[in-house]
Image (tube, rainbow, N blue to C red):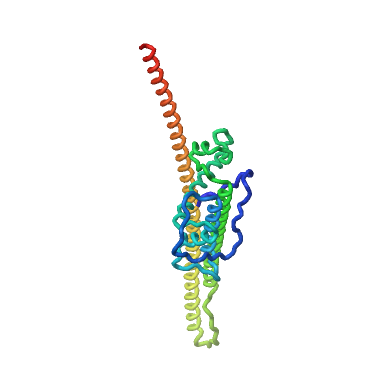
Length: 309
């Protein structure tokens, strides 16, 4: 899982007015004669799309009993219907493409802002203080607005918190399921070691005394053998339970280690991408300088030629 989005800079605008209450939203059915709007998205249309995406995620994780989603209903068709009902006249394909572009631009801005805040140098000014050509020079989206960034940041923060809560709940449930199993095994072992064969006492006459002694000795020997077997089985069960608990613990540790490795690989990928962008920018700068020098040399050569003639 990826790291949670960083907090927003204090200079940004306040939270945009989009729906936050947990209300049931049921968009109207899709008419067959819709005429979709084309061209660039406005900020209001983008905020409407973000709200629709958040509500769609909520209705899928917590479906409403009063208005359940249809089995054959496509996710982006639901988003299109919501957007259409709120003045955003876009198709489901337009919404899908716009959402992918928003996430890509948001990740670039968030990554750059984290670098800007950590280094605090002139080479990394804040994204919100840069002009359009400066953003383009840093390979950043040129038209990301603070309202859209805040809305996306809020949505992803909520989504990350929900995932963390679900993972914590799942881990607690797993631990609760493991403990009764081990407790039951321990109780069975304890019950097995405490069980003893019932002894039946009866009056013994003098003629039957020797037979009774032999029978009692045989019963005691059999009862002792049975108790040893039960103890041996109980010990094996306890050892198996201990091995099982150790194996589960090892699996959890390996899972955490794999997650850490994935995060490190993602960080390396971002560093490599940033290095590549820096090399490209430097190459372009060197190319422009070389072209400038070449142009100056050509002009100087032409001037010398005219002077000689």
